[in-house]
Image (tube, rainbow, N blue to C red; front, side, top):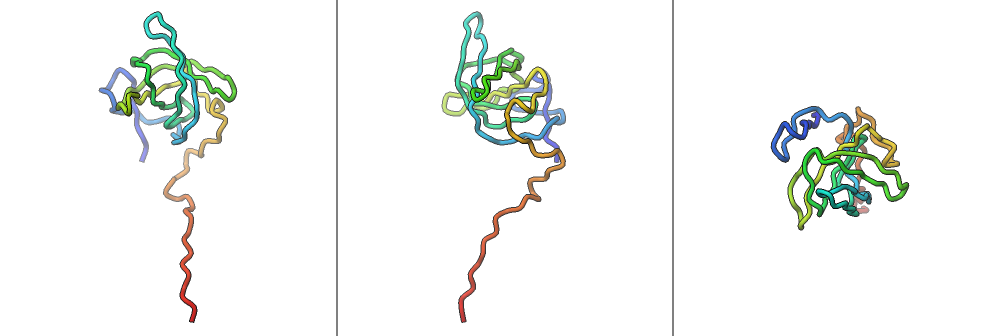
Length: 136
């Protein structure tokens, strides 16, 4: 079943409508979010909740607005990419789920291998539990 997503302005918060372009990976990775709140610049260290070749979702303390332009920095490589806020989700412990979309797809930004598009998580090998039978 394909995940879907809508343009930031089309649907209320938390609702998706258009087909997702790349596989999402749920992984925690440190990032730095840089932007401006009005005229005041901000920089916040955060961690991803999930990511794909087109962006990521993080929990952010700093309030942001849909369509706001910011930059995401990969602190391990110091690479910085422009992106915009495309999703505002629920609040968790004073932080808001924020979805960011890169200006251009950038799968190499994360320095991880994404699963192929035809990958089906239900078909992956799961650890097997060996049951010991009683000796006779």
